[in-house]
Length: 192
Image (tube, rainbow, N blue to C red; front, side, top):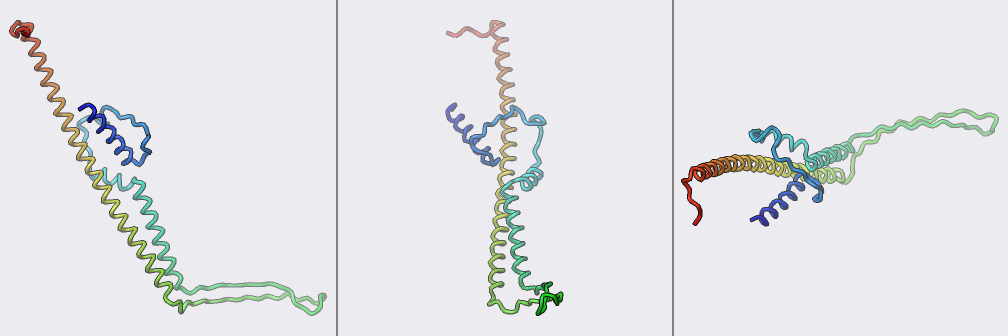
């Protein structure tokens, strides 16, 4: 049982490091009690909200979703007309002594009319990537919620086991005390 317990403890340590997104060789120092005492309860909804806000993989996917939305907007913006201004300043004359200053200003409006549906295809591609990222975001969020709620359930079960172990310890201590009292009173005999 001791070998199995050590093996389970090592596996659980690795699972904890993986859940915390830490390197697997990180040393852990576990405290004997939980902050707030054994009676402290964990609010599952608050724990889920905190995990959804703080988990790095969810934030990374959120940033990729923001970038994909910008890509979709950029492709859509390519359909808008563009206005450009060009200005030039120079000199002009047949002889160097009679140079005249010349100016050239140009306003240009470019309206994209035909692109062979290239922009539509690119926009559809960007929207598909955005949809895939949003689906992945939901899946990771659901997985995180499951992991947190499972951890809260396991923590509650562990607290119940600790309470039961304390009750068994108290009963065992009472039984030992009664046996000592009987022995001292001479009621209990010596082993044969």
